[in-house]
Length: 363
Image (cartoon, rainbow, N blue to C red; front, side, top):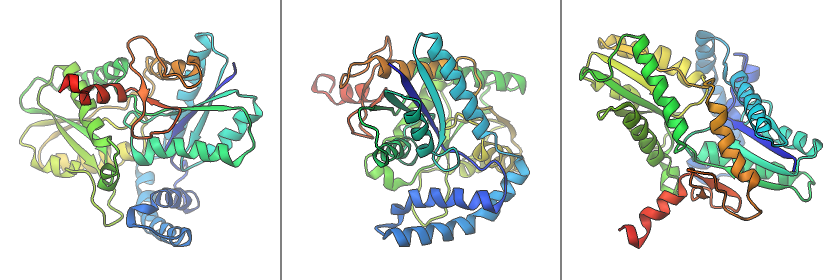
C-alpha cells in the first residue's frame, strides 16, 4: 500500500515583510474567529484583517531582531527524516511538509498526495501537546481539503496527542541536562528553578473539552521525573490580541515572582525554533530575567535530535498497518480513539489512560 504522510506544522513567514506577515496573521485570526462569539464569515474576515494589520508591525520587528524564521526549513527536514525512517522500515511511504498558515499550505499537500497515487493518507501534526487551534484544527483542515477534491477510495487517519511517547520524554530530558551542563548550572541546586514554558491557549477551548492544559502538566511532570527534579514551575506564553481569558500564569509573571539565582527554561510545547522561542524567550523573557538578577538558560528545541524521526515513525507505523476501523497497536505505545477530536480515524496516546482512570475498577 502506498502511504502518504502529511507532516503538519504551524508555519511562519520566511521573510519579515507586510506582504508575508499580514496574510499569515489573517489566517490565524480567521481560524480562531469564534473566540469572540458567533460572527458571519464577512465579519470574521474583516475582524481578522484588522487584528492582523494591528499585530503585524510588532511581529515584523521580532522577526528582524531574531533573523529569518527557521521553522519551515526545520519542518521540511523533519518530514524528510521521517520518510527515510519509514522507508528503512520497509514502508512505501512519502512525506509532505504542510503548514496551517503559510505555504506550502495543507490543501496543496493533499493535492500532491493525490497526484502521487497515495492510497492511505496519514495526518501527523508535529505538536507534542494536543490543542484545539493546533492539532485538532490542522487535522480538520486536511479533512476539508479532502472534501474539496474528488478522491474516491482514499482512507484518512490522523495522529493527535503523542507527548506520552517514552522516547520523546527521554530526548526532551536529555536536552535539558545538556543545556544546564553547558551553562554550568546544576538542576539539583535549590537556587536553580526549572521553568517549563508552554504556548498559551484560550480558556474557551478548555471549557469546550480540549485537554491541552492537562497534557501540558502531564508532559512537564514526566520530563521532570526523567530528570529527577521534584520542584518545577509552569508558565504560559499567551497572545492577548483579543479580550479573552487565557491560560495562567503568564510566563513573565512567573519570572517576576521567582526567588532564585538561575532559571532553566524549557519550551515544552514546541518542536521547532520559531518566534515564540527565538524572540519571546531568547530576547523578551531573557531581558526580564536578567533585570531581576536571574541567570537565564534557555533549552534548545530538539528539532534535529537523531532519535526524533524514530518517534514520528512510531506514531505513523501503527496507523499504516492497522486494518480499516481497527485501533492501532504497537508495542508499549497504548493507542486509543482521540477524545479531543472524537472522529473516526483519529487516534492518540492519551485516550487509554483517560478511559482507565475513569473506569469503576480504578475509582
